[in-house]
Length: 315
Ligand SMILES: [Zn+2]
Image (tube, helix red, strand yellow):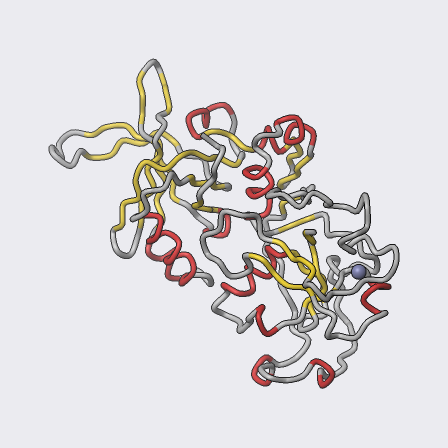
């Protein structure tokens, strides 16, 4: 069965698998989920076993994934009676073991979650868990919950996107699940907008199939397949990623790996972004610089809010 969260022994916090991916790809702080220990998020259950009773991860480190990332039981993982994460517990939350994200966060938080460290990371490697120093918990992090309730918010864009993509065949569900971003509350269905309809409303998550990724070595332009119609004329749509934006990104390596793989991929790929709305601009023509033509374009301002991925079923 899939777990939406797990307790991280290194961080002494409950994390979603999307948090773990953030930590793995962040170059500004050392973290390796293979060296962490993930335990049952149910506090009572976790307390009943030793720290060696761990869970495993799925797609915690894969930059380009197709199947929904999650935590899962190992063959020997034990749970107390009644723990909802026990594999044989009927009617448990997330009992469907298929390829879906079952946990829909009700809010996408625009400020990044920080992950305070329990211990200096320099000595983390090879240190057995029982040697972890006891540090009094003085944090007031709202994500630390006394129960095994799953955190209802996420700051990782990949999480709501995975909810949408993996449940695209269940429109009723997407139309029923609420999502809050900033001041706005809508449903998942309403928040995700096809790029060709971007004029309908501002401040949504726009997405579309990628036509081409222009690799200018240090910067990139993503061209969408569908065009926007304005006054009965079609206009191309693109988003631009500047060198400065990429150079300053804390997940630069993972991002470059992802976009370079995408630029040379022959699979259908989709781009999702939030935070900017492409607007009609006049740009000089390459063939004839005296002339200009109109294009809907936006400069991406935050790479945390942009995703390029395969999305089977999106069509
Ligand atoms: Zn348990």
